[in-house]
Amino acid sequence: MEHITYTTKGTCSRQIDIDVNEDGIIELVKFTGGCSGNTQGVAALVKGMHIDDAIDRLAGIKCGPRSTSCPDQLSQALSGYKNK
Image 1 (tube, one colour):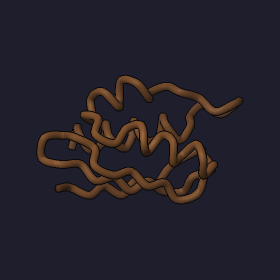
Image 2 (cartoon, rainbow, N blue to C red):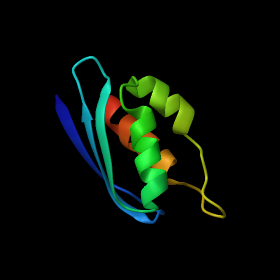
Image 3 (cartoon, one colour):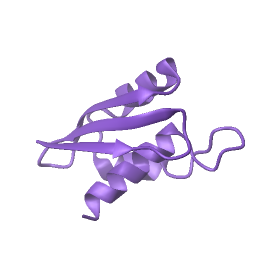
Image 4 (cartoon, one colour):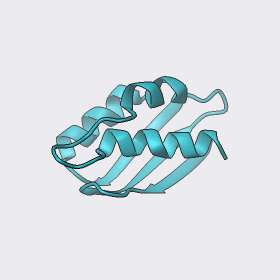
């Protein structure tokens, strides 16, 4: 199991903690800050998903006038992990 701690940029959430297993499956996502219901929903939806599928589904989502969102920041955290 690998733990990722990602500091978000441009969102209400401040940090995302992610656990990914050795097969690239997301086991846990926890947002610090942000809209509680939305971040809990995103975390529940990606649990059990392969990181590639989560990146594909979440990348580029915007929040209002912002150029990013909590789901987009999660995709960026996962992309950074994948490309390390």
